[in-house]
Length: 225
Ligand code: CTP
Ligand code: CA
Image (tube, rainbow, N blue to C red; front, side, top):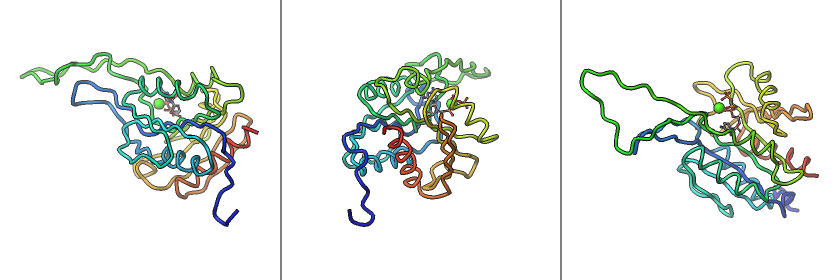
């Protein structure tokens, strides 16, 4: 192989990556959302395709151009993301949940734009819990040996919270990164620790999101055997 050209170690594999952030509508013009850009998920999709995988990218509100050679499914809400991920995961060797999934959605959707009323405070927004997609696919592996990877952005006690979350979710790998006002969101770079259910800890130094993506696929490939 030429220098800089990767061995196609994911050839013959189907991988599913979710990216972006879900939006939970309140009315036709408003939603509850988050600051996820989708860049890390797209980097995962691009690098997996470059390593020979068939890639399904479930994209939530990223506005990013479709990566070449990748099947892209556009979704809006957490419920739609769940549908699309479960469908694609049915024959997948690995599923990577890089999307930021809203934990809650408004209990009611107003078909018309919500208007303010004179001299009256607004009604509180009642929320319902969204399904936990990562916990669900981890508990009910669509195929034996399917590798499931989660992402967690933490602001405090990053490693301790990450370990607890890995156990709670039941996934094989959890990529944990520290976030704050000026860290990670929308940026081209990332810094993380990849925690394994086997107790392993793989630090990934500050660098391009592609480098973190390559490390994730290295760890996934090792687990696929
Ligand atoms: N995730 C998911 N479904 C949800 C919420 C999160 O699949 N309803 C996935 C995310 O895609 C991510 C991982 O779970 O891969 C961790 O997300 P995070 O928000 O950190 O986990 P939560 O369990 O929601 O914990 P927290 O209360 O800290 O938000
Ligand atoms: Ca959450």
